[in-house]
Length: 404
Length: 79
Image 1 (cartoon, rainbow over the protein chains, first blue to last red):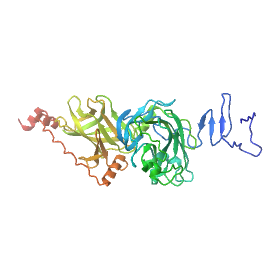
Image 2: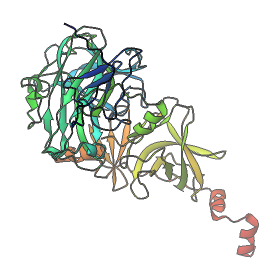
Image 3: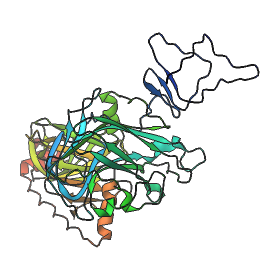
Image 4: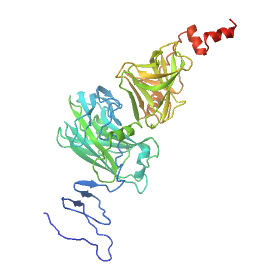
């Protein structure tokens, strides 16, 4: 039944300072207008947009690259059977002995988004062994979570929201861990109702008044969207309050993606925010997201001869090299190299690089110093200055990783 | 998963099928944390590759490295 009350003005009674609406407040209609000196509600929706009830009004989304815009390492990889950052920045496929996968930054996405992160099974595992698993992880840096006041009486609840699509339907699990508190855990569930259809999901994360998150550059919260697993991870119960980790709860509701070839699961629009309301996704520019991603990963390469470091030849078989970084990184990074590289004295000589090594002495998070070992060449003497480049190889990549 | 030591005491290389990762010995680096866990499992890294033998310098390269011209060298030697 719909009832209707037509009034010109709602005023507080004499001696009452506040007019209280006991339920949710929703304002709709093109001619509608709402004004008040103070307006508060647990759930306030105006013209279909939910408004926050905790946290800031901007920079709300604690997830970096939630729209899957940035994929510095690659846009698609095939034949994946092990864990590691592969394509979309900040989101890490994690797996052990459960099928073979193509992982990509897909252009299939719901309205309002250009990309998603897609997992497609190319070799199935219909009966995973007890310890087999596959999930997608995201780790939030601890010092970015301090405003949630975890471990205090004023700890704030959070809301996780995302778009998801799969050929599989049914209940699935997101496991959330607090690494600073012996992996205290939540394992809430969400349900995919229709196959091959983008659906928006919201998960409530209760405040934790007893577990503080360290104010440092470590892993503050770990989110894992589980696709499939064996019994070690799916024989427990979904936990909706913070509790001591029980591994069997991690994937208590198992979606079972990867039981057949061409099973797929994809996600985008991931948002984590303070409060109990899922507000509209906070879109950020590509440049903004890239800079945030580069705190954890910076990639050089792509051109035939990409230059990425000024060298000083200390021997005819090696040199030290410096790179000022695009943005300060979380910690001293690792260097991963694939493909062909060379050390060159422009116009004089070049030599193929065989080994890259990271040099702690002289590196910090905003400038790194590394060493190269290369084929012997007598022209590289006397601390002559040169440069390091990819060597006629557009596929070569020099990747600095300071991921959580 | 296999690791190889390097000529530097604060760096180890993780070797995989198509990539090589140089890992600094820094406590907040998660690759280093994984390496320490790998060692705790009782594993042992491969020894470092020998440093390549330097190619002998030619007399001309030695002269260029010294910064002297032929005339200056002659004058120095009283020739």
